[in-house]
Image (cartoon, rainbow, N blue to C red; front, side, top):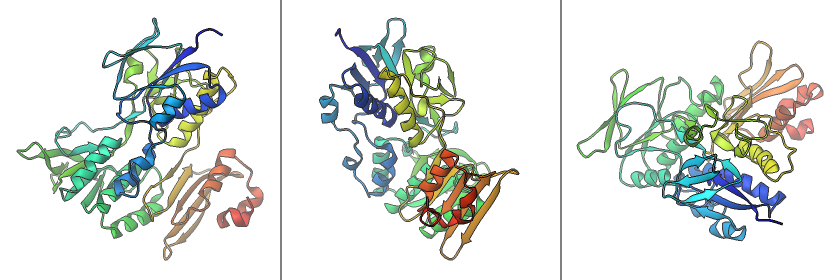
Length: 406
């Protein structure tokens, strides 16, 4: 056997390292592996940053692979380095500190960047995103010294940030352009119930508001937010949680095809067959996924091909959403809004704070929106994903898996 092939992974996050784990399970000795990570940490669970912010978890709790894991598998981990160049002719990757690594196969897992609206003041001290450990540490530090926090964005991430800062004693306002919270994840009724629950915890919501500028004091720190209608509110900390954009800078720079994300085929290959891409940086059949389940499905297929098994295909994912706020249970999946061709079964119990809506098209469940009781979320998700005929279950569907008999 000659020298091993070289695999270089750009991105030390959940998608890239999950692909490596799957690859090691299939073909442990095929590659010499080098991983570049822009952060100073080993691989950690980004999904659990919210409980770290509230104080329910510590940083140690969310590490997925410690240094020992990389060493055991002979993986060279280069931390705190950003890859700035890929020479596709010489097949060499170069980082900002000059470190180079040659490759036979390259895996791009560069993730996404927070979307920062182009308004004045985003560069002020005390304006942060909610994306990595450094951001969370900045938020925790600010919560011990300041009083007024404003979160821009009423999506999953924004609400988790707001809840975490409120748990640390800050007075928190959530500013959202839309007229309902989680408007991409919930229907109107569930959204209103969520708003009531969060207001009961002391959060303030400013909906249908457009932020015009972030205002700073003489010290270069944020002091207020101004809206398009001229109203101002005080702010010592501003968290930007208005969504993410695929990080395609490196792919663009080396001439790969990019259209909102790095464009990949069903085998997770880019237009250069030696270069694979997975995770939030990817656009597959016109969709970029920002959730972890699709990333893991992509990782499995990419690993299958890197291992030279060559039989996996990724055909896209049905996505579901959950909010990581202790004591508030919500779940949505598939097409929960419905249309003229669908029918909905709903159950609403305002007293117990429970709302469920199931959307059916023909004889298939195509969407679900649950608030207050999400015990059957995984089962509904499975029915949606498998496209099972639910004709015989229809009357018992709302009662859940234990009654309807899975």
